[in-house]
Image 1 (tube, rainbow, N blue to C red):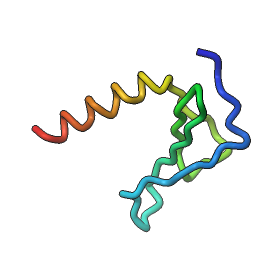
Image 2: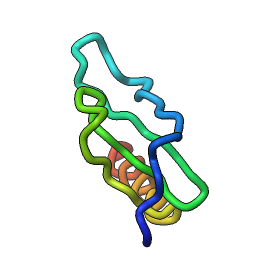
Image 3: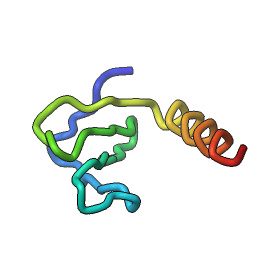
Length: 66
C-alpha cells in the first residue's frame, strides 16, 4: 500500500476520549485509514488499508465481548 496524503484529511477524535488527553484520532481517505496520537498531531500516523482496519475493528470488538 502506498502511503496516503494526510495533509488535507479531517481528523476525528475518539468518542471515548476524556479530559486527560490520552486520545487517538482517526482519518479516512478512499485508500487508507490513518490513526495518530492526538497529543502529537504533527507526528507520524499509522496507515492501514480499509479492509485491514475493518479486520482490526472486528478483532477488537470480539475481544471486548468475551
